[in-house]
Image (spheres, rainbow, N blue to C red):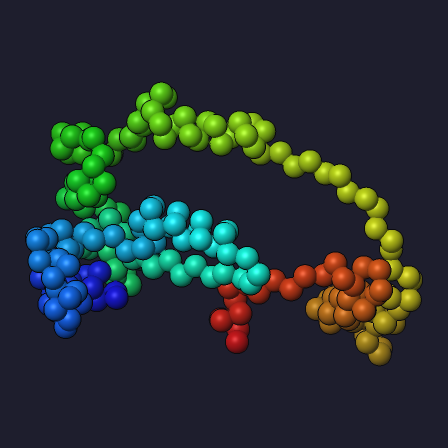
Length: 208
């Protein structure tokens, strides 16, 4: 799929649609350029909405949505679908123009040629901006706030910390070892143990 993201519309027509006459017939009236810009599911707001609506409506078991996206989507042939995207920091003027054309952003060539690209604002009365304001209002305002209604928790018994306090023989116990021992005993505590939740960080893969 990454190859399709970096190849031409003619290549996609031949290798993706070409093996099955029924598939090829689906794109017979499309130009190579139109095929090249066919949206993957994860970039198609209608498909994302439909998938989410179906997931919410499905009852009785968990639902997984696999949303296929393209790395560097809409950023042009120098970025889109390429592993080097992570290391590339700047778009050229030509990249910016392709990006503008692809997303139909009303910015002129002159504005892009003059220096720093301008910010685009669709206007305070636009549908997009009004939607954002409505969402913020429904969430209680523009500044994120945290409402705390915490109830005091029963504290673990003093013996929970006994192993860490004893140290490691003749030496002070290492901080990592002390933390692991305390954590182990806290997780065994009948009152507070159920409140510990495992979080798998990105480093799982790095550190095996």
